[in-house]
Image (cartoon, rainbow, N blue to C red; front, side, top):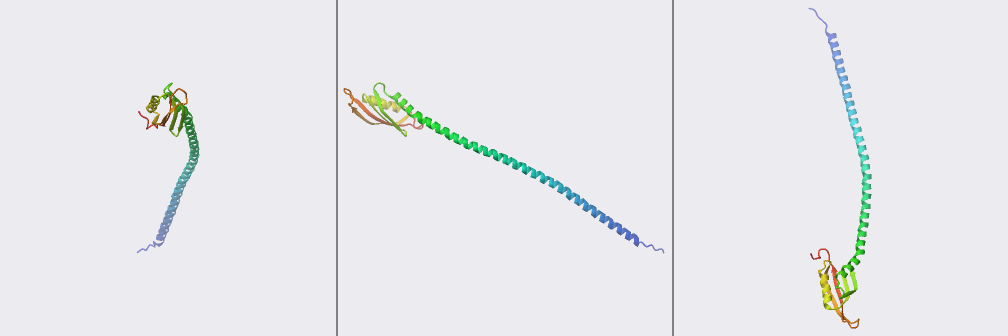
Length: 187
């Protein structure tokens, strides 16, 4: 019988097996390092892109904040101008009101039969004092005021004889009324 010593061959096979396993381990380790490096590179690229996007967004926010401040300043100036325009319009109405009142009252008067000696307006209340030839003239004047769309609550406060002009028996009257608001005006 022949005996063959296979021990050194098994030892060489074990060494080769260990070398292969170490090689596979090192290659796997290198592959893991390469994959980790690639993921790190990709993620750092994404982080850089997001940081750039954040910086661009901050620049846009600053730009829009400046625009919003300008808009706010313009709105304040516009509000001030609107207030000034409203004051001017109210002053214009106040300026025209006495002239319009006097014009309106003169149109309502009975020609050649009466005249006003006093016309006063305070906060919508109008007081008229005048002289007429007779009572029907005063009644006609009151009817004209009542039929006007601009006045309401017409009241004859007093009517008296006036003998200041010799030979004429005149009537001194006192009438009060209110300026009609838009919902009080008759249609």
